[in-house]
Amino acid sequence: MRKGAGYANNVAIQLADKMFEIKVRDGLARIGVLHTKHGKILTPTLLPVINPHIDLLPVSEIPMADAIITNSYIIYSDENLRKEAVEKGLHSLLNFKKPIMTDSGSFQIYKYGIEIDPIEIVKFQREIGSDIGTILDLFSERKDYEIVKKETEETIRRAKESIKEKGEMLLACTVQGGIYKELRRKCSKEMAKLRADIYPIGGVVPLMENQEYKKLAEIIIECKKNLPPSRPIHLFGAGHPLIFPLAVALGCDIFDSASYVKYAKDNRFIFPDGTKKLDEIDEIPCNCKICDSYSADEMRKMDRREREKKIAQHNLLQAFGKIKKIREAIKHGYLMEIVERGAVCHPNLMEAMEIIKNNKRWLEKYENISKDKAFIYSGKYSIHRPIVYRLQKRIIERYEPFFEKSIIFDEMQKPYTSKNEWLKKIEGNVFIDSPFGLIPIELDEIYPVAQSVFPEILDDETRKESSKIWRKFKKLEYAGYEEFGKNSKNFDLRKIRAIADYQFGKGAGNALFKGKIELIKSKKTGKIRNVICDGKHLVSMRATDGFFTLKKEGAKILHKYFKPPKMRVYIGKEAISFVKEGKNVFAKFVLDACKELRPYDEALIVSENDELIAVGQCVLNREEMTDFERGIAVITREVV
Picture 1 (cartoon, rainbow, N blue to C red):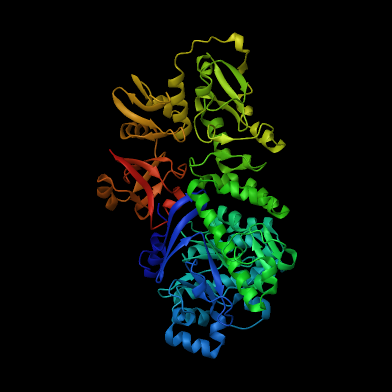
Picture 2 (tube, one colour; picture 1 turned 120 degrees about the horizontal axis):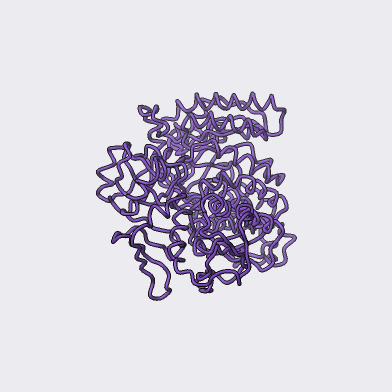
């Protein structure tokens, strides 16, 4: 049942639970809204670092930023800045009306060995009106295990004390643990118990500076697995667009960057695939408003300060441009393509792809059931996407052959049976040897089978992975084409039963489709659109992904057929009357759910006593539904 019930009387935690919601998602990547006192922050996002001592690029000249981040220690340690911040507030000091996050000085301790009181600096952030404050964690990197362990335990202790002082300020509790997965796991679990507002992953700047992206990916995943899904994840110090796609795909929501200024002072331009010094550039390969206005030669002839300002503006535009591309990719379901293509920019990013490959089983829990955009092959890691893992797993576990004899054909034009009608007539199990592996022709229209593009010549990795489905079907009896009858008349029935088993669970097809079946097909394409059984409309078939939209009559059958909690989302009694009016199920009313449900799956909405109330489509999986307090968990389609 719902987590965190013991915190019901803690007002601060209740507020925290309601400040973040998911709007759109593509696996772990999500477009969300973070609510603060000074407005909303759309995530994924980048927070430009503002140093009150450096006015190279005033905040008035970065209108693209939803929020900024500054260092509270710098303000605290400067008597004049501290006085103004206390008297007039942080937003007045920085002349910024939108949300401001403050760091606490952890990096200064790590870099310069300064001393700061961990509780006093949190109180100071609250006092000056920071929207999001940060605990004073201990920055642990490549140190002896026992040293890092002690520092991590101290960070946890400080977080427990600091959270008592946050007031209405959102508080970021940083996860430390150095390069040790065990310590990252322990720190994440302990921080999760505190139900903090935001969870930064700290101590990773040296890894990014040394381009150790494999280790970075390992750390992100270890933290993400053990932190509450309802909280934004901030990858501290990540400001280069090269790392954004990978980090977002692994569940990071917020980044911050001081590099746009730091690189500008070194005459370095940030580009999506790396950085380049001005002296190395003949023509600037960019058409942002800065680079469209000035040539490389003109930049070199500029006054130093003016040149640094222009490069800093360019660098920020590059970073925010990448964030926009990522959000667009999330909306349409092709972020993993961007990740895979970006990985070829650096060998160490290719190593990070191995971490995604090794964690695809876990990633699949968060993967959409289908996507707006076709599955486009971009290299050997495409076959390891979580949606391919699901396709192979479900075919192996849920598909049952209909005949004694079988036949395999090579890949052909898709959808296989629409373009090759003769396949439907074969009186046997027909498989297509596709890049995904053996595909039963009854499943030829589902996502991503029909909606995929591969080259004719496949890489060795793809060929190896595609052989997995063969292991299930290799024991079948195979025969040549001439040995089969060519007059099968029940292909459509086999098709809808196979899709139901794949989508809802083994046995769903036979449970749903027995009796007098009427298929309503598109007059234009001839494809199945609605399935009527004994006069009742059970399902509609979506043209976009080949899956079923479950109707209330179909929901009744599956509710009776499947034992709880299969396909169920359990809601509290206070929400039942609203759902019966056709309103959506909000996450805060979800008591529990079937662990097999995936984002955009069909779901049975039931009471705590398993009374069927409605049928709908999930937005979240079980872990998310039972953790979020804000946003929609299930879109209600039909009330029973």
